Length: 530
Image (tube, rainbow, N blue to C red; front, side, top):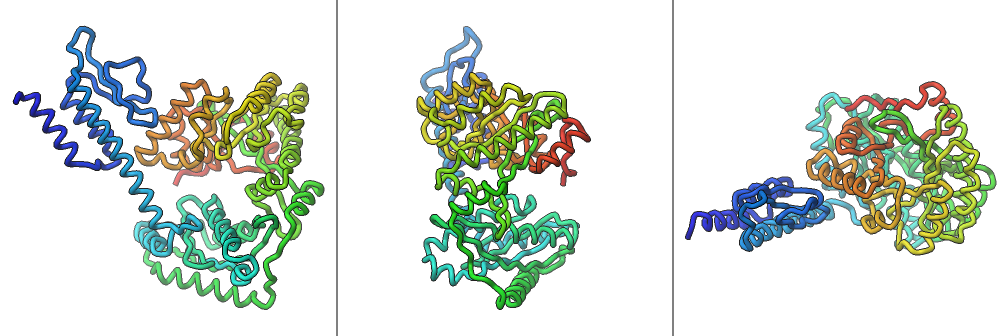
C-alpha cells in the first residue's frame, strides 16, 4: 500500500469515526480532511462559478469545489469519490444536527403555544439570574380569567385557539429583547422580562402587555375578548432567589385576580363582520410608518405603512387578527384601500417636506394580486402627481402558486411604475421558486434570519441569502433590526437596506412628519447597544 493510499484511508477513517460532526465545525473539518486527502485548491463557495474541476453540492447554494492549475495532473475518479464521501458525511452531519436541535426544542417547548415548558423555563430563569451583572429584571406570572367558562362554552378545541393566540402574542415583540416566556400549565403563563430601567419601566411594560393580551381574538366567525391577570416581581440583585421571585409574582397575580373577581365580566363576544365594518366606517383603522434606511448612505429612503386599529370597547386590535378577519370576510381590498389612501397622502407630504422622492411600502395579501383587481388596476393612475414610489409587499408565508393572472397584474403595475416586494423572506417554504418568478423590487429578509447572526452558522445562512438575492439583481432589506450588532452584521454581509426598532419604531404620520422636519432624512439614531 502506498503512502497516498494510507492517507486516504486515514482521512476516511477519521471522518467516519467522528460522525456526526459537530455543526459548528462541519465546514472546517470538511475542508481540512479534503485538503489532506486531495492535493489542489480545495475551498467552499456559495456558487460553483467559474466552473471548477470538481464541484460537489452541499445544499443551500453551498459547494465544495476543487481546482488544479492548467496542465497539472487531473483529478482521478478516486479523488472525486473521496471528496463526494466527505461531502456526504458533512451533509448527513448537518441534517443530524438540525434534527437533534429540532427534537431538543420540541422536547422543551409546549406543543400548543410554542412557548417554553415549565421545566425549561425554570432552567433559563436560573441561568439568567446566575449570569446577570447589574441588570434589572422582573418575573411575571399570568393567568387567563374565565378559562373554565371558555372551555365549557367553546369546547376544548376552540378554547385552545385562545391559548395559542396568547402564546403568539407573548412570542411577539411585546417583551424586550432577551426576554422569554413559558406556559406553566393549563391557562397559566410566566415570563422573564430583561433590561428594565426601574420599577416605573416595569409598570409601563405590564400595562402594555395587559393591553396586548386582552386584545380581540378571532375564534371561528366571532371575535372574543378575554382578560388576563398579571403579577410581577422586580429583581434588582443577582442574589435574589429565582423560585422566590416566581412565587412572589404568582402570589401577586392571585391577589389581583381575587380582588377583581366580583367585578369580572364574562368573556365578551362580537360578530367579526360588524366589528371590522364599524372600524372602517368610523375611521378607526389607522396607519403607522416605519422608516426603511440605506445602511451605506445612512439616510431614510422610504417608509413601510403598517395597519393599526382600535375598537371602542376593547381597545387595540392586533394587525394579524384584523387582516385575518378581513381575509375571512372578503374585505381585504376595503382594508387595503384605507391604508393606501392614508399612506399615499402622508408619504406625499413627507416627500414634499424632505424635498425628494420617497418609497412607500404597503402590505397586500397574495390572494389580492390578480388581474381582475379593480383596486390594484386603479393605482397607476393615482401615482402621476405624487413624488412617491409605491411598492406592494407580499408575504412569502402566504404565497401559493405564481400564475399567469399574477404575472399579468404585476406587469400592469410595473408599467405604471409600481413595484412588488417579497416580504418575510425565509419564513415560508416557497422562497427560492418565488424569487425567480418575478423581478422583485425588494426582498425583505425575515427577522428570524436576522436574529440568528451571533453564531457563525446564522451569519453563513444570512450571507448566503444576501448573495443569492444580489445574484438575482434584487435588493435585500433586513427586517426587524433591534440592535447595533444586528445592523452591523447586515451591513457587513452586504445588505443595502434595513428597518427595525433599532432605527425607529412604527409611528403615526404626525410623528414621521415631525421627525423629517427636525432631522431631514438622516438615519435615525438607535438606542445604545447593550
